[in-house]
Image (cartoon, rainbow, N blue to C red):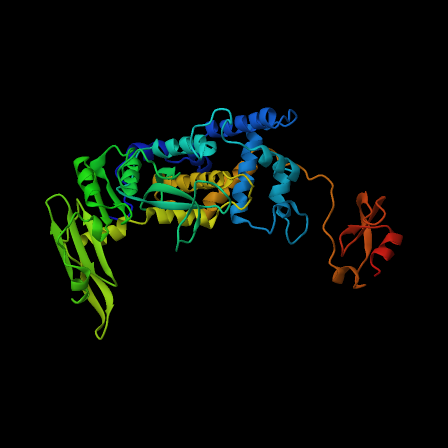
Length: 466
């Protein structure tokens, strides 16, 4: 078993099975035809039964185009939703008008639904659970193919009103839905669930419950090492993980060490930088290290040896190599997978919004399917140099072009800046295809080459005069 960051566990069966698959084929392993059919069915059901609109109908191809435009909005931003269909040269995004007209997109978004309102579970986020369960199963069906796993919290931005919304001070995203995640060191999501508040039926600490829940899909326990921060770690958790066959490592708070007799923080601060202390009860080893601040780490697998050397700035001595316990080095290598996943998601988060409370969770799960398929594509194609952005663009454009591009029908064109319209320079009329005059609305075959507006000769004089 290798100790390199994010090193995959040997999984030649999975790699060989999907080797050579195109990017869109990999994406369809996660966001499957079953999911698209489910979304289409629930959207039609909501429109026909709940909103009594019998004329509305959407099929799988329309749904795929709708998804493609949502993904494009994540890396192509304009000020408002209507601007995506603007014909103005400084705002125009041709693929939107070629894929779907604006009113059609808005009607699909208005009736878009994930769950049957007459058959909801008794949970705060029941309206999004069917999609979450399907996507989570698709992320797990290929097995756990990384050695290092990290468990942490992630936030889905949301500032509206909902009983599941959380506030976390001093975080990049302070308001939103909290999601527990278990990811590989490179950000592949293996397990995730939305936190809906305290479960009074369980007596264990919340961090203990989360770790045990997140580890349920892990089968070959001896092939993986689990990392988590001091919100989750406790001596009791480490003992139970050991009895269940899991290898684990995490930072730990002073009041959760099981009364481990380590040197106090004040005593260790008086020693030189790089000093450390450790104790073990033959099941769990706790180590306390003097770095920029005092760090305490607990593990049922790693020890302090072999001792590592790291460069630090020491007062009055300059840059100096100091000791670092091995377990702290491994924690730094293995922890942070959820943060990597968060970074991928936040970089290209879909910007088309809705008033529905569950919309942000829905768009987050769509976004998560892209991140998962990108990491899986890299896993089965180790030599691939494609970037996250280019992978995402490939998926979005494929979805948007699932059918022959539509031809944009006539409609209002963008206005001409007044400084150009009234400058009296090079406003010549030339022959062009027949269309409506911008002024009198009657047919004409003349067009101003500078303003790009169809105009009669008489209308042109009035149009260019203040």
